[in-house]
Image (cartoon, rainbow, N blue to C red; front, side, top):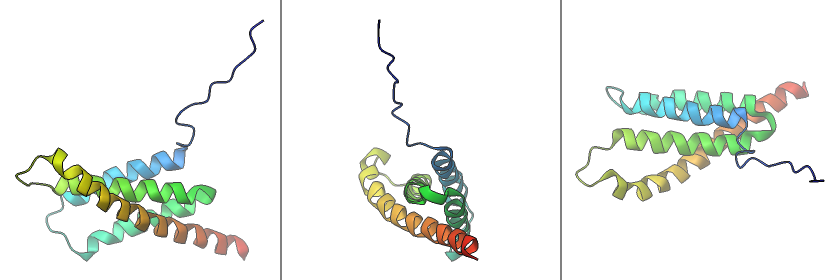
Amino acid sequence: MIPHVKLRSSMSGLTPIVFTAAIVGVILGILLAHALFLGWWTLVPWGIAGLALGYKAKGQFVLTGIVYGFVLVLVFLIGQYSGEQSLVSRLPFFALFGVFGAICGLILTTAGSLILRLRDFR
């Protein structure tokens, strides 16, 4: 008799909130990359979305924030790029900015998670 083997999905860490964070990052990155002009106000929807994701993520706010920030910055930079060099040659540089975005996303989702904990503490 063959023993029952449960196959583990390679995407087991991709929970609905993390997937949502990636989708929100893509949508906001595309929309604001094509805004008529950029200014400090572009950070407002990014910040609100990060706080909301952290609030909803509960225990998974770390991975959610990292994914959200990285995807958002990477998509935004790709959407803004209009240089003469190929986009592929710029991707490593964009990925470094994506790491900065991941740190910022982590800060935002941590703040959103803290808001949830403060609300539950009352």
